[in-house]
Length: 177
Image (cartoon, rainbow, N blue to C red; front, side, top):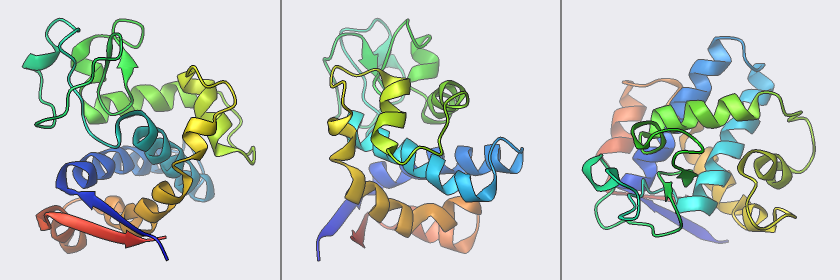
């Protein structure tokens, strides 16, 4: 059995994104059945793009001034945040480097896509349009995304709950896939 470990920053960023997904599900954007799939799409994308870290980028004006995870800086073109959204294509740094706002923007782009397709990696590729056209870069994070979801999906549904606070208090979380 493979063990997947996520540190506090990764866990916090993933929980923030899953909270947004739960909120959108409560607002009727997806049925409960598809909300979990959307959560997996979000986490699998973030694991691929940034390993769930909120990256600043010294190549992007102002990026270093916005909150980001210590020690995590990217240098890929004008990409920032957990989704590695390119500024200004995806919007200003203030949106792309804010985990909740970036997640909402990603979900806006995901809404028109038929997410009933079997291939989560290609659903992500339709939004992100990465240089790997077959989505294999996203598929490579499938097991880690499933492990993260198994551990944190329910806690993210109840921000402020005891389970949610316990997850955030732990310095490291370990999940099994």
